[in-house]
Image (cartoon, rainbow, N blue to C red; front, side, top):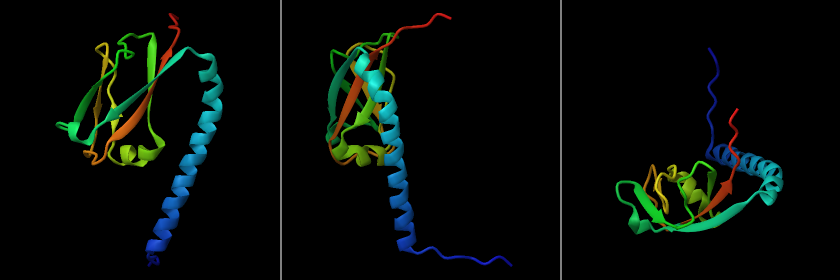
Length: 129
């Protein structure tokens, strides 16, 4: 009969810390690849705040005139470092932009703190191959 091993809380903490380090290493590697591309691209940076009290039905829409519903723009959304874990743990995600000037965010669990998110708008060339 196979031996069953019990996992201690300390072992679980160590695994969690290793997971965090692995994630940070992957993000650093990704930034090394993406940063040169972003530096040469035409882009607009947008900062939005998702107030904790504005969530309704696990959704929230914010306004910014730089948000354009045009296929020549791609958007990358990332939480500020101070609230990155809160945004990740609550499953905050952005919808595609379908109406000029607004973007809707959804969450799995309603955040209890205000979240600051950065949106990077990239202008991309469309290939008609």
